Length: 315
Image 1 (cartoon, rainbow, N blue to C red):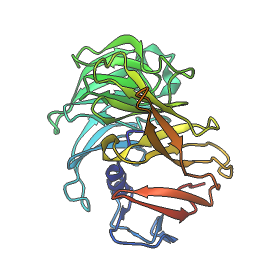
Image 2: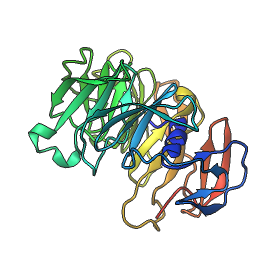
Image 3: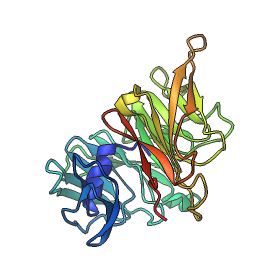
């Protein structure tokens, strides 16, 4: 889940809280209808998009999806987001698009959920023209192309589905399958999400994690790196700060049911090294939750790595 740290902060406001700069302590405490660390100041609640699972921050605009449609927000004042438009685009409440993607011209949505993959009329990729923020419109569909997440590649000229399939969007009104897969070289097909960390450079949330170069041939990306935490745990999403140049790759896991296991909701960090002889990048599981949920390591934008207690799990 191409996941922007600033988008998380703005989305937090929509559900009731935003971070305050400069705080150093981390002590959880209750508030009016929420729980937060002491470096979070509650500013208010906007009771919309309450069932959203994801959003995309693009400049001063936030594109949010829920099971009813697409809401575009003006977040130039983060303390007072203003709705710009709402476009009906029904999705399943169980798996609302949790990593909606857009380049500001087109926006990509799967329909309903993974649960409808065998229901032909509901299983499709939809393409919306969002160039007019006040009146987005549906311009293209591709039957059979629904996926848990769908990621823009090379300015939305292509889409990489989380299930491994690749869609040609060079004509966004007429999307088509390329007939190829980004996971062609992997034993395990598909993953949970795909992140374009820089134009044409992609890291997949899969097992193993794949580092792909799609700059020359986006329909047939080249594997230029791999990595795994070593225990085959589920990989949910990733973020490589400073587009693909930072020391650490940030990886999140997801565990259903028991939150008391060692790898429950794991937050992981990977370092990377390139082999000049082969040109391959090896991702090395570096830190994370190896001491269990009581101690973990979290990276903050700006170059600081700090240790915190209790991790990011909510059970």
